[in-house]
Image 1 (cartoon, one colour):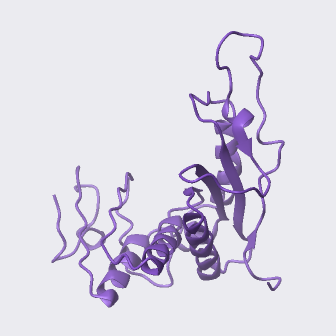
Image 2 (cartoon, one colour):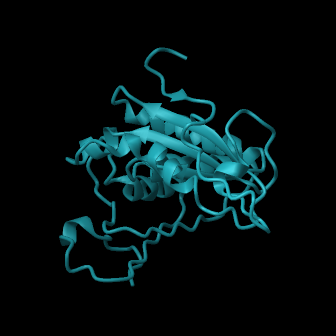
Amino acid sequence: MSARDPVVQDGAPSSVWRGRSDAGELGDTRRLFDVVRTQGAERVPGAPVLLGFCCDAGVLRNQGRPGAAGGPREIRRALAGIPAHGLDLFQDAGDVVCDDGDLEAAQQALAQAVAAELARGAFPLVLGGGHEIAWGTWQGLRAHLDARGDHGRVLVVNLDAHFDLRTGRPGSSGTPFDQIAQACHERGQRFEYACLGSMTATPAALGPRRGWLTG
């Protein structure tokens, strides 16, 4: 791995996973910081695994403001004190870090990390970061399915204020679903994009294009 390659850090700092202890109370008082594993360990099939994507490059390319790279750490900090509610454990696999603007390399590293977690039987949850995580995550899922001989379609539910269907290249936080559409076209797979909600605030050029399913 060269100095300019994305770095996959093994586990998040333990200082993030902290909170109050209610161990003196009756019943299950565990919070997420009590059940997280932050160091390398065997995955439990089906158990959630957090994977951060620390990257500002996609947002900056989309004329946004920096700060998305700090998202994974702050999300972890916010999650730490949430009650575990029966969850016995989950893994924090660390972060893919893009600190040199090479978004494409970082997305490829994210894809490889997602595919690896799926191959272990884990359930990866990717923390951004900008919405360029969608392209990297989809590539990882698609690679995992292809390796299993599963060439079926993938359902993506996108809850967002934006369609993220911009066609500009290089890719950005605004292009992931157009990149997925292009990849599906190259694979000979159908791509449908169903929009629920108002489209009046979006220029027509940035919305779903002819031939796509819209609602």
